[in-house]
Image (tube, rainbow, N blue to C red; front, side, top):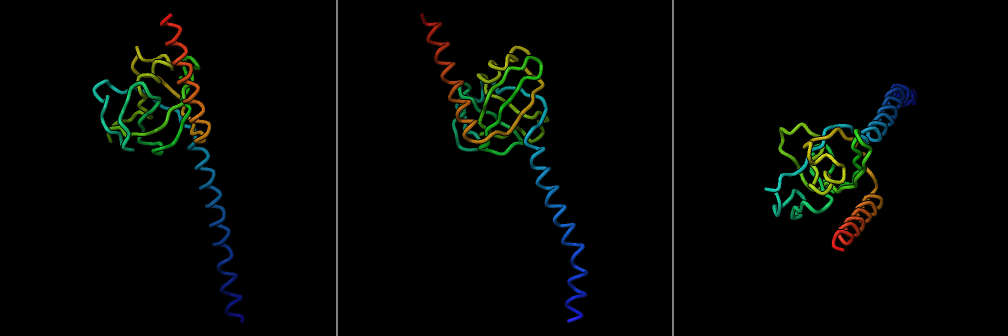
Length: 152
C-alpha cells in the first residue's frame, strides 16, 4: 500500500505538467488561427489544372493555395493596406519553397485590390465552414450583380 501511495505521489507532478502542456497546446492552436503574411495570386497558366483537393482550378472562384493552412479550411483575408476583405477556401498547395502565406485566385486578388501590384501584406483568419460558405456565396452574388449592372 505504501508503495502505491509513493508511486502516486511521484506521478502527481508529472500529471500537472501534462495538464499545463495541453493548455498551452490549445492556446497555440487558437493563436495560429490568425496569421499575417504576404499574398500573391495564381498565374493564368494554372487555369483548368487539378488542385491538391482534386478540384479543377478556376481563377473565377474564391479559392486559394497555402502551405501553412489546412486544406479544406475557409479563411477571411484582409488586405492590410486598404482594409478590403475576401473569403476563400483553401484547396491547393503552393510550391514547397514558396515563402508566401497564401496564393489567391485572380478574382480574390481583384477584390482585395492588389492584382496590379502582384503581392500584398494580408491578415488571414481561419473561420468556420458556415461563415466561409456564406462569405463566398455573398461575394458570388455581388459579382453577379456587378456583372449584370455592367451589361445594362
